[in-house]
Length: 106
Image (cartoon, rainbow, N blue to C red):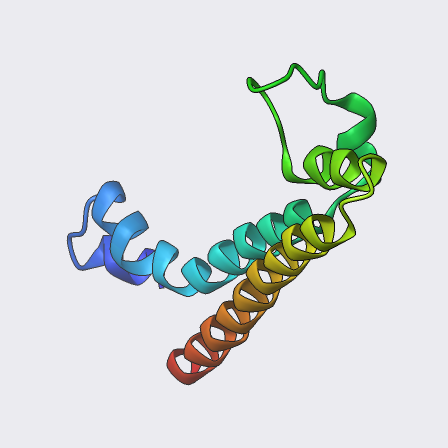
């Protein structure tokens, strides 16, 4: 398809934006969304490598860990549930994106 676009007079930039990128766009967005959903759910490694400076670089897994150390089980549960909800919304968006990609792939 790229060679056909070039033979019809398209520039390399137009070929990239109009021929090459559209079929790859759903896969790129799916990869980004899956990476984000995985990052939201990651717990152990982020607690170990974060510097944990109070009120400066607090991340959600460290916040959960602090709540558990303070025996605030309800607070830790709420934060975990919000993270889970974000992951579920992202996975639902991925499914919609894949369905959209399959519709236009044929």
